[in-house]
Image (cartoon, rainbow, N blue to C red; front, side, top):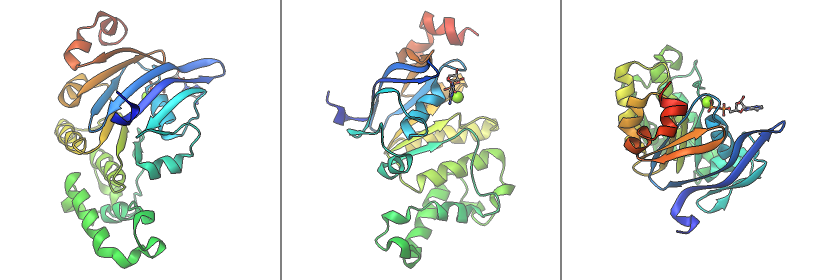
Amino acid sequence: MSNTDFALAVEDLTVAFDGFKAIDTLTLYVDKNELRVIIGPNGAGKTTLLDLICGKTKASAGSIKFKNTELTGMAEHKRVRLGIGRKFQTPSIYENLSVFQNLEVSYPSGRSVFGALAFQCTDRIKAAVQAVAEDIFLADKLHTEAGLLSHGQKQWLEIGMLLMQEPELLMLDEPIAGMSSRERELTAELLKRISNNRAVIVIEHDMDFVAQIAHKVTVMHQGKILAEGPMDKVQADPKVIDVYLGH
Ligand code: ADP
Ligand code: MG
């Protein structure tokens, strides 16, 4: 298979912090329209891997290709423009703005024909905001101040802000932390839906949630891949039970 068949091809990726290899010659391929879940004990390097893919952290060695374009060495904002969206663990939304305004400011102005004069196509932006608000279960909260939303709703809003940019690869770090069980159910539904037309990488600890959403599971340990495959196979793997699931 050539690299062009993958949304993401990570090969021999390594990053060392003062000699400590947080990611160690890691190779990982994610298909287009795949929902991949990454699990593993604390300190395994999961967040660091996302940092390397989005450009927050620079790789020491190895390659990261997105749609066959080399990302290592490319600035973070350029990766965003290529179609990579990253959600961090704590939601970063504008608490004083409404849900509508939060989504509106996330509309990529560079993509509009009018560029800086994006205000001329407000109907198109409004339609995009409406569609995303429905996706993230906040269509009836458009004029609510974001600061007044529940923690789970804030997480959805941040996902919505990323969806406004129509990313082709969306990465989420522990998106259901602090959510109610109903919010978790809805989030599983949302993630499955948004992976219909893009690749999604989710880091998650809650194994019931992982089982609900994952196409394939990657288990990381000490900066390397310990196991990879369908959920049932990974769960039955003695190495995985030993370093992670058994605890
Ligand atoms: P996980 O998300 O799997 O819990 P992390 O990727 O956050 O793990 O961390 C992996 C390891 O790399 C940890 O030992 C952490 O302390 C270390 N690490 C992460 N980022 C840095 C950094 N910027 N500088 C030094 N060490 C780091
Ligand atoms: Mg982490």
